[in-house]
Length: 64
Image 1 (cartoon, rainbow, N blue to C red):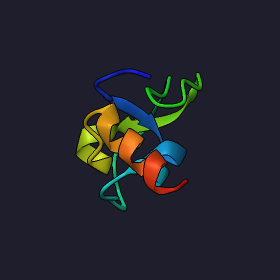
Image 2: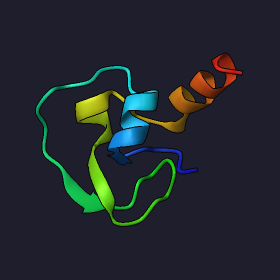
Image 3: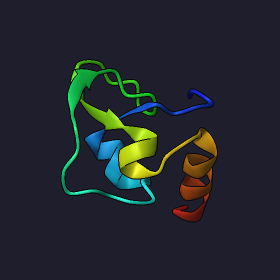
Image 4: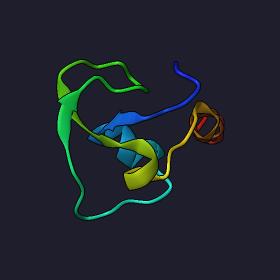
């Protein structure tokens, strides 16, 4: 997993995001969290409040 998260697919954004906006720009790219290719992605920091994988590790520990 990358240290800094820049691009995130909508599924990972909803799962790990700290915030969620109703309207934002999307494009087809590779997700920096799950590494799925050619999926609809958005800006992780701007649209979901995800800046690094520290947020994801904390969220995964809390959900166990």
